[in-house]
Image (cartoon, rainbow, N blue to C red; front, side, top):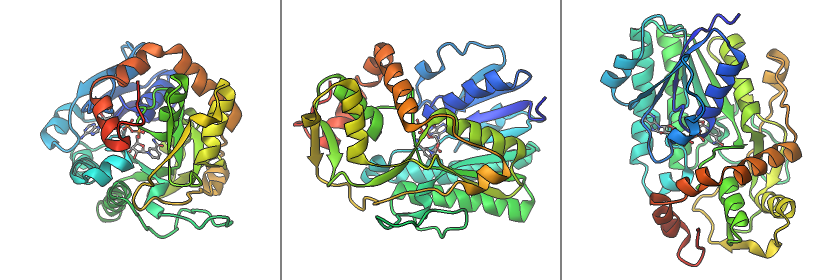
Length: 344
Ligand SMILES: NC(=O)c1ccc[n+]([C@@H]2O[C@H](COP(=O)([O-])OP(=O)(O)OC[C@H]3O[C@@H](n4cnc5c(N)ncnc54)[C@H](O)[C@@H]3O)[C@@H](O)[C@H]2O)c1
């Protein structure tokens, strides 16, 4: 039986948060979850379909509003897991304001409210992007104490959030754990992100926009493997500790697109290079040795098995995709990639 029974999750209607909710309901039969999410454009009630479970309580609210957080966060909460964030780098380049509000101010509000309510443990979900870009063709990897060097407003806001979590641990003795992960892929990822955008365009025989020369390297992990690592860190991670999570799976962007097209039996001519993202980081690569040795975590999926599962889910869930790709998504897409690369 887990000693984490009463769990407060923020951002649980998003891609990774909703996968984590599913995992907890399946793995911790005695847990009770509050899922606190503002339902921004990225928060999707469809992600919570089938989760009509008496142990899962959804509350719509904003992590930057302490009144709303205190109204939802009960005394006796064992752990708060903070997934809520503005999470798309391109949007942070267009305007950073919401990123500072949610990712920085929101994290501080949660830390303050957690102390006020006597929450026993605080888990901050962070990203490899706080450590900047690694050289190409090198054997350098991000380790837990690699220096911070965020290059986008998104990464800078996530780095600031990590600093605030560290300060709450150091100054007030709050029991905190930070997890950092590379690029996730899997079911229910909003199709503004690279892999589901490429996949949904390929499924619709639409051109797939790829930034620059397409040789940027990302370290890909299947979302459920990431969530299992967070669960281990939540239950057994060192207080004040940070854990890098990665599946040792570096892929260049063009190879990701080729894998998708080949698996779907679509022509590689769908790949379409577009102007590079300003300040585009070249390479991210995690060294997950610490979480492997200290918490005995290993990913279960290979790149091939994870991609198969992901493609299968998108093929089987046309309604989800159709709904997320309608309305405001179309406006965003036109603004980002221009009219020549249409999304349907
Ligand atoms: N996606 C990745 O590859 C990746 C990799 C490493 C780390 N992360 C981190 O993991 C977390 C989850 O990422 P994701 O990809 O699931 O993001 P997402 O954009 O799919 O979901 C974010 C969720 O947060 C909610 N939210 C946004 N602002 C809020 C606010 N002010 N108050 C309450 N809820 C709010 C949204 O409604 C949404 O449900 C983020 O903190 C992100 O930085 C993501």
